Image: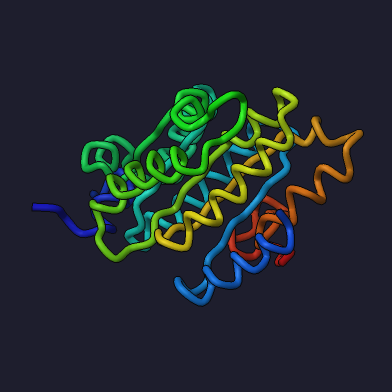
Length: 220
């Protein structure tokens, strides 16, 4: 038998812009307050702290979590969640906290250096159904950096297309998504940063010591 969300997640000593804007409005109508968040980070510690706060708030609401990231970020997020009092080992054991590699997951749906919409839908649907099965009816909280991997490769167009595919997936699945981009790749690409923001609902901004929701700036 599964224990309650709080005991399972709790403290360790207790258990294409206009079209995409239309998509986000449709998703909000279908699933309530759909949130597709973005953070531009300048160091790994800032990113890890943001992601851990985002997922911790979800765990305390009984929401399962999915992380699709590179190895050093997966490890850092797990450590930070533990520091915040989340029983990471138990969450993993119950399937409430699942971690996937960003490069490996990209390989499941990239064809000729471009994301294939059908493969993306099929592969991510399978992943989300596995995560959501632990808490039927609950929203999944997801962090992903596949787009950052693509951007760092110089594949900005493919990264933007993946953002659009995420928004399309939200028409049929209940989740909130946080994306992370290394800000260093945007110093000479202000238009690139604007393009990324067009496909998100909120920007993560403000001091890290604020409650997570108070750091969100609505951008669409």
